[in-house]
Length: 325
Image (tube, rainbow, N blue to C red; front, side, top):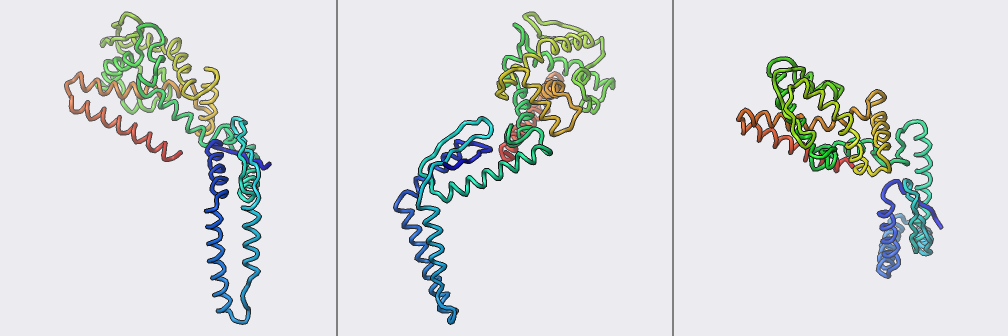
């Protein structure tokens, strides 16, 4: 039995080998090989005639026939081992040539990959999968894109609406602070921490928070304190549990571990996984808060244009992710 290591979809590789076994076992394949052999004979004859003194090289035909007979005559069994899960798929009646060459290349490639990963790759592709770090960060982005993808994380406690609360705060407080010059939009976009990114220390405007069965109308400074506390105590654990399902992990605690490994691999040490997770959610809240501000001011065309541009960008990113993968 020959063994192949699959760094990818082992079921797809098994389907390919099954197809090879099926095709090579038919008379049509042998007829195709015979036709190719006949063309080879004709070419060798013409070559011998043109070369004159060298004669016709029948030995070339003999070598070709021997290679074909060895590679596609006998069949064997192939075991495909998934490098990630350890699952083994067995395929029978695979021609000896594809089985042997595939096994040799697979074992050499897998061994060399593991050797290089000891020094150069974190997390290892053979353990986590191709582009696993990028896939993990994109899964967080998709899992925080809307209230639909947030799921239960949008309402960690009965009656709560985290997205609506943040959108109201952005429209009533954060962007109001930008309008009066208390904060700059670049300062908001470049702020590295979620605790200060959207914060507006203003006591005059008020905003409505929906963090329970009853809505609360609070000044902006007190509203942010309430939002920050609720985010730390309720929203982050709920978001972590939601992303656990998105990332297909066994326990909520594995989410931050996986994200931290991905961030360390792509951005180097110093980027906090929990902060990244919350900031990814806040990006969507900020964009929707901008749309609500335009609607509050009666700028309907601008609100529709902004919302459409955001939707088109998200669709483009999704398409580019599929193309990259």
